[in-house]
Image (tube, one colour):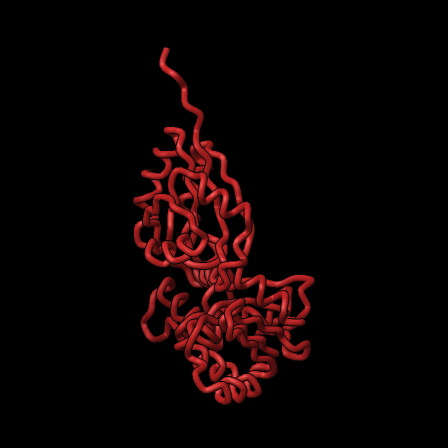
Length: 292
């Protein structure tokens, strides 16, 4: 009879965010023992593995090929091989590749095991001193000011006052300036180069943080994890609409837009506070009132 092989295991392994000594003994053992390591950037991962004296096979698994590579890894695990997923730094899937492979593995009944460790967002939250009874993680902040305003309004309306996000060192001052220009009533904690030799934190209002960054000088180096706390008086406790959604749609359609395009135009308006579903419902009410 043909021997039935037991399926391999998919390990999701957190790696250090800067200091290689933060790698857990269990993580080192798993990276040593698995049949292959799926890495976001094999060149960067090789540097870490060399420091940890781990010799194993690295296979590329970045955001541009993770859809295609998932089938390859699944077939390897079905054949009995175990795979460890790592990213350039921190915990996989937190604004990093890995989720598509996890979904595929679960769909195939393959065991998925998390190996906890470093996460830049969690580390920044822990040292922020802000209220952490609840918080939200938003990944990287939008680049366009219109999208930034929408997200800021969403944060002001949220059920929590504390938010964590990531930002590129090349755009960190642009982010701080955005909050200054919006006169945002917030407190910020910017964590730069966490766990590394020259780790720094910048705290205070956006204006105070900008002054600290300028005093540092080379602030556009190293990755940033940002934690924001909305001041109590800056929170939207209740949305008060001064213009009905029907009126906003009619104003948009006066220029010749159809209902679908009018909804899109109102959603793009920075002064709009209605959701897409609310606008769709208003559009249906208009159709009933005036016919097709």
